[in-house]
Image 1: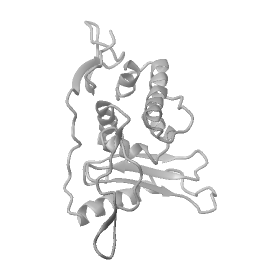
Image 2: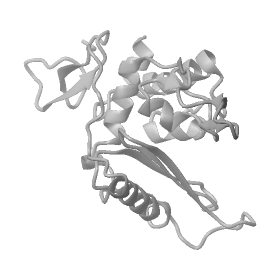
Image 3: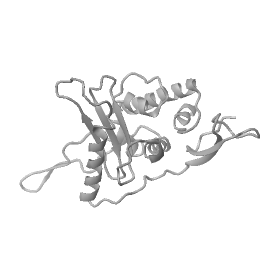
Image 4: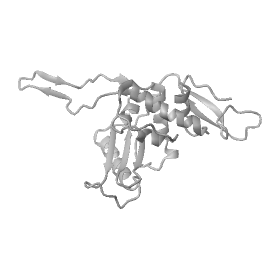
Length: 231
């Protein structure tokens, strides 16, 4: 779908109208395919609003699992005193709600250290911080190839926090959590699996379209297999 392809063009020039439509469309795709909880359609093209426009409960692990949604599981396995298995959730069945290539492109944006402020994580990780306008809620959501983790900081009585940004409050805690967890579990840093079909295209930096004889600046970026560059 052309809208989905536009939203995942990261450092490219995106016409505001198309970007807004793309964001709303991707939000509808996820909700339609599996009822992943979501707020009202977002109306801005920035990826962080796309992530927080949808309920944080379902989105981070969705990208981490390549577009496959799994219901929350609090108990992995229950056994009787005799050793019989009463309940086994160790191999849950997921449902695809987002194209694998699109999920990877979102991950590629969120793992890019050159365009984010949180770079203390010692392993390859995709993450996004978020702060409510009233500074009552500070979030950091993210994942590595091993684990997905979300962290919220706020007052129990819903009063405003003295801090101004999640970068100063939630992000350092999340970073420490990820670093210590990977160390204790002896998990090595691994790159996210790139699905087949992802391609790299060179674009005109100023227009986001195919370069021409008058192109002054060029850059390359990755796209899904069915993306066609704008002329």
